[in-house]
Amino acid sequence: MSNDDGVLSAGLEALALALAPLGEVWVVAPEVEQSAASHAISLHRPLRIRKVRERWFSVDGTPTDCVYLAIHHLMKDERPAIAVAGINHGPNLADDVIYSGTVAAAMEACLLGVPAIAVSLVSRSRHDFAPSARFARALVGAALAEVLPARVLLNVNVPEGQPEGYAVTRFGRHSYGNAVVENVDPRGRRYYWIGGNAYQHEDVPGSDCNAVFDEHLISVTPMLLDFTDEALSPRLAGWNVEGFRCRLAEDG
View 1 (spheres, rainbow, N blue to C red):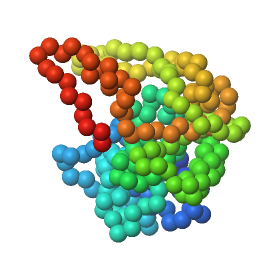
View 2 (view 1 turned 90 degrees about the vertical axis):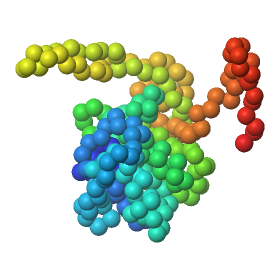
View 3 (view 1 turned 90 degrees about the horizontal axis):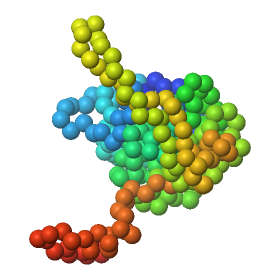
View 4 (view 1 turned 60 degrees about the horizontal axis):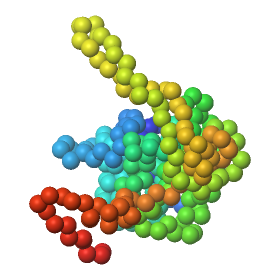
């Protein structure tokens, strides 16, 4: 298990307790909050691991660092059966997955050949993790029994309160606004805050946003790590790129 809210987060603790009946749980999470760290990895400085308690460790790095160290070092003698990231304090819907450290933790595990699930609670203030933890335990149990395909992870978002079930979804489209707040510090230098809170989502049938906000359902979105746009490839090969000839890559 890992996350981006930090090793002492309430969501991580709730998830660990929920998953304990399924097997031996190891936690390797950032020492401090790393929200919106995306898939950053620390290649130019050393990392330190601190043992918090039995099978529970903090790392002074990113969520990706944590998963890398967990799989290649702390658990190198017995690879985990599954990696679960969360429970995130806030949504990871639609384009959020590009920025999310929690989703990146699951992606890193998936890249390293370990089945992975990311779990988020769609709430900005009231964090009751019990419904998310119950669903996570049920879904992880099913994933262990069914086996996820290679290079596919599940991104889960749980609405606030008591969900009315779950839906298998696709990514939607939403926006937090495009605000840039400009101000001046005590020394007279300008600084800027980016990102806003003016949330709105498009009506995309079958999307994670629609499921969570319009239908009060848990969204479960399967994510492929292969970003290749196969449909565009033949048309792209036909572009007139002056002075160069296109040669299509061999299959595989």
